[in-house]
Length: 160
Image (cartoon, rainbow, N blue to C red; front, side):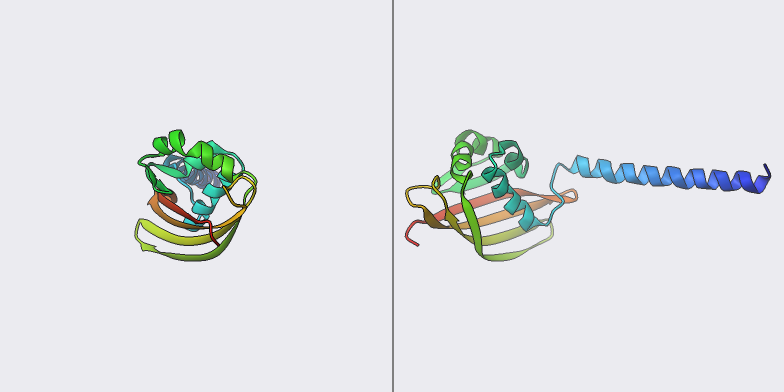
């Protein structure tokens, strides 16, 4: 084997090592962030989808540990408070519920985004009526390459 062939093999081996290192770096960075790399509004939508499917762990993973949830006049000051207080009821109400997005405004900059959404909720487990309008204010914070929910505020209009 001549010197040129040896250099070429070392060059290919070096390029392969760089590619492997880059792939590992990207993968580890995504794991380290502990957040969701989807657009902010998809993270908020995924939260409700997790509730609908009864997946408490998935729902909680989308909330920041310091997330505050305001729900019908009650306040959960942390993700753990929410898990202990309102999550079981929200899971029961969301399973089998249909949610139709009727309006959404997005804003924010830097590490924070906000969403103002209105939904039509229908279902047998959602409350005293089978159909209602829900308004939602959501604030998400960028953590690493993704987003986590830091605030949710839900209100219901039972008259519509």
